[in-house]
Structures are given as C-alpha cells and as structure tokens.
Amino acid sequence: MDNSVEKTRMKFKQDSLSGAVEETSVDWRGRICKSKHGGMAAAVFVLGLQAFEMMGIAAVGNNLITYVFNDMHFPLSKSANIVTNFVGTVFLLSLLGGFLSDSYLGSFWTMLIFGFVELSGFILLSVQAHLPQLRPPRCDMVSDGVDCVEAKGYKALIFFLALYLVALGSGCLKPNIISHGADQFKKEDPKQSKKLSTYFNVAYFAFCIGELIALTVLVWVQTHSGMDVGFGVSAAAMAVGLICLISGSFSYRNKPPKGSIFTPFAQVFVAAITKRKQICPSNAQMLHGCHNNVSSHVPATSTDASNLLHTEKFRFLDKACIRVQDGSEASESTWRLCTVAQVEQVKILISVIPIFSCTIIFNTILAQLQTFSVQQGSAMNTRITKSFKIPPASLQSIPYIMLIFVVPLYETAFVPFARRITGKDSGITPLQRVGVGLFIATFSMVSAAVIERKRRTSALDYQETLSIFWIAPQFLIFGLSEMFTAVGLIEFFYKQSLEGMQSFLTAMTYCSYSFGFYLSSLLVSLVNKITSSSSSGGWLSDNDLNKDKLDLFYWLLAVLSLINFFNYLFWSKWYSYNPSLSHDHSLGQDIESQNFNSSKRVGPENTIS
Image (cartoon, rainbow, N blue to C red; front, side, top):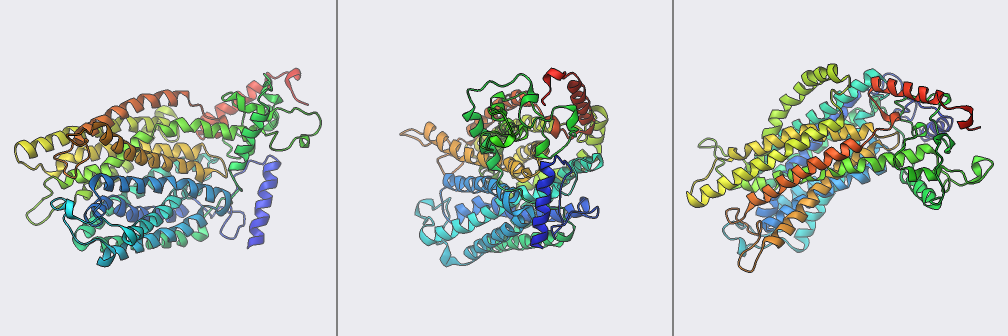
C-alpha cells in the first residue's frame, strides 16, 4: 500500500509541474478516488466525530471553572484564567494539527492519532476526580475560602497533565474535522460548491447538537453524579466519535500531504529580501511563472497552487519572481527565484491576517460567557421547581436550543432567498456573514452589563436574588452572532485555501479563539491591576461577585467590541480575493472573461518569449 501511495504522490507532483489543475484525492489504499468516494454520505461520518467530540470537550470546558474553583480550590480570578488559558491552548494547538496534516500525516491520520490523545486526557481527568487522594481536602471556597488548601505538587501536576492532554488532542483534531469533511466535496464542481456551503452550515448544526447535549445532559450528570462520572461520560462520547471516524474510512476522499508548507513561504521572503534593490517590471508577464495570459487556460476556480493568477497587492514580494540572470530557469536556485504562484500563496496568507485579527475580541466575549457568566449564574436563583435546580453552566445551552432551529431555517429559507438576490452560492459572502456576527456580539456584552448591575443592586440593596434566566439574553444574542461569525470565518478561510494548506488555514479560525481567550486572561489581570488601590481591590479581585464590579468589565468589552466592528469594516473593504480562488461560479466566469479580454490587449511587445 505504501508503494501505491508513493506512486500516487509522485504522479500528483508531475501533474503539478505540467500545469494540471484537477483536484487530486485518494482513497484509503492510496489509489485515485472514484465517483463513489466523498460527498455528503462520507462527510456524515466526520460530522459524527464533530458532534461527539464537541459533546465531550464542551462538557469539560464549559463547567471547568466549577471544578477548578470548588474541587481544586484555586481563587476565582485564577480559576477563570486557568479555564481561558486551557481553551486558548486548545485553539492555538490547532495550528500544529493543521501543519502536521497538510505537511506529513494527512487529515485522517492526524484525527485518529490525536483523537486517542484527547481520550487519554478525559480518562485521566475522570480518575483524578474519582480518587480523593488526588485532590485537595473538601472545602467551601465561598464561605471558608481563606482556609481552603489549593491544589499543589503532584495533585496539580496530574490535573494540568490531564487538562493539556485534552487540549493537545482536541486542538489538533478541530481544523482537520472541518477540512476533512469539506474535502469530500469538489470545489470546482458548481453542484458540489453549493453542497460545500451547505456542509459548513450542517457542521455548525452538529456542533450545536454536541454543545446542547453537553450543556444539558452532561453538565447535569456532573452536578448530580459528580465530576468523575461527568468526565467519564466525556471519555465515552469521545470514544464513540472515534468509532464514527473509523467507520467511514472506506468512503473518504483523502488529500495526500504535500510536504512542509512553510518552505515555499520562507523561499519567497528570502528571495524578495535578496532582490530588494531590483525594480518590479510594469508588465506582470515578465515575472517568473506568470499565468495571466490567454495561453495558460487557468480556470478561475482552480485550487492548484501552481495556477494562481498574479495580483497587484504587496508588490514588494513580486521581486522574488524577477530573473536576474539570462539563460535557463535552473540558473537560479529556488531560494533566489520563485514563481508567481508561490508569491501569491504568501500574499493570500498575509491578506487574511487582518480579517483573522478582527475576530479576536469576538472570542474574548465568548470567554466571559464560559467563565464569569457561569459564576454570575451561580449567584442567582437557579431553582425552576421545588425539586429541580438548573446548573449555572447549563444556561449556555439556551442559544444552542435556539440555533438547532435557526441554522436549518437559515439554510433552507434565508440562503435560497439571498441567492436569488445576490447570485452567490452561499447567499451572502463569508465576509458579510462575519461582519453581521461581529456587530451583534456587542449587544451581548451590553445586555450582560445591564443585568449584572441589576443583579448586584438587588442582592446588596434589597436582599433579593434574581432568577438565573435574567442572564439568558446575553447567551441568546451571542449565540446568534456566533452562527454568523464562526461559520462565515471557517467558510472564508477554507475557500481561500489551496491544495496542501486547507487544514492550516482552517486552523487559523481556531487560532482566533485562542488569542481571544488569552486576551481575556490578559484583560482580567490588567483590569485588576489598574483598578486596584491600597484601600480596595480591583474590579475582579474578589471571590464574591457582589463585591466585584463585573458590570464595568462587561461595559469595557462592549466598547472594545464596537471599535473592533468598525475596524473590521475597514479591513473587509480592503480585502480582495485572488481570482483563481473565487468559488462563486458565476463570478468565476466573469473573471475568466476579464482575464481573456485583458490578455488580448497584450501586444507582441509585452509578451515573453
């Protein structure tokens, strides 16, 4: 089988050098895929992993602050930072998963290996939560916090080892779940392109189902049966997800790894710096490997990296494509002379960074809903009936209950309606979808600030405890904004990716989550330091929310979110798509026509021999 894979890989390399642009995929034996492979039937198995993995990790992450605070006895602000650092690490490690997948392992094997790593972390967490000798002595952190013993030594070591095994496994899984599912569809096929847009919505629906079950059933189990049983159920869910992944092995379309994705990027920068004193030619046809002419016949929707069309942005990088020696192309090394396609790949990566950066504040808001908002709910009346209390962490399930109805409605009603108006496969562009979500997110923090002020006033001035459902609007508003931003961002990054870098660019979506959670930890520390004085602590320095100023912190985030939205408007207007990666097929035809017409205007004096 190894010989078959190697032969196939060599064939792909020869096709790339000869200018072939057909999308390449192999089956589980390394043979060229047939029509029976891929499609939604294969993607369903990946969606199964998506739902069950999310079920396991969400049950741990969304209620982790309760375990860290009540069982491991870390102070509230430190507990919040432990949670945000854990979630941030999960998403930061997605870059590692994307790199390993695109460069060496392929998405299937990356998911399989790191799926078992995540499973081992869940099991270790369950064992520690079950054995009293691996945890500090029982203590009430609210009433006897000063006397409680914080987890240290081997107890803290076991906890963080288990936690970051989960982070490593989940982080490396996440970008590959999305990209491997999307790889089951041919982006060049107009019918498959519409199904690809549908897949992203269905993947988010699977995500919502996993979150909903985690935040209701699994959190209820953690609250009533103990964290050890809850972590054990997360392990069981992860095991079922891996079974789903393995069950679809025979039907997958697999993209072979292309080798290190960073080497071509490094070559561009080295060549551009080496030739920094060269002057870029006014005619792009003079650049090495330029395809912007009629004879190249490059489809406007090709995902082959060797067929990217030249664009005018970041012209200084074009110097890497200037020939400084006469004679054959081999007279200069690949570290001194690069193709236009290589340079355009780097341009794409640089161009998406501002879009990526604008979603960091959005994910900082998400961090508050998984930390301080859970503690906010703990200080409220959680009783629904005389015999039933809702776990505070389960309040996060409210938006997902809404979304399991809204997401299908969005796909079946809004997208076809918008498609008739805009002519785009996805109804509105991914960038427009992200913008809508960023705008809505601001109002989540406005709602949170107003309700927290009311809650604290009622508790201190009137000795009344508000119902936990008062904080439901902040979760609902953010859930709606996440449906737009999260799906739009994943679709944007995947559609801007080339063969050999789908998983890595998809990982940048999750890296935004990482930076958002790290920024949350930084903001909490900075706010405490700036607002503290000799006579009183900072806004978030006490273990008692009635003594803190959480509402002011929420207002700060609302202002930052609004500023971030206007920043996003600027960068989204600045961003321009590479014509080769325009997956809207009506637009692709227009681009091909424009390329043909512009190439006809190139006279003999402008052509390259």
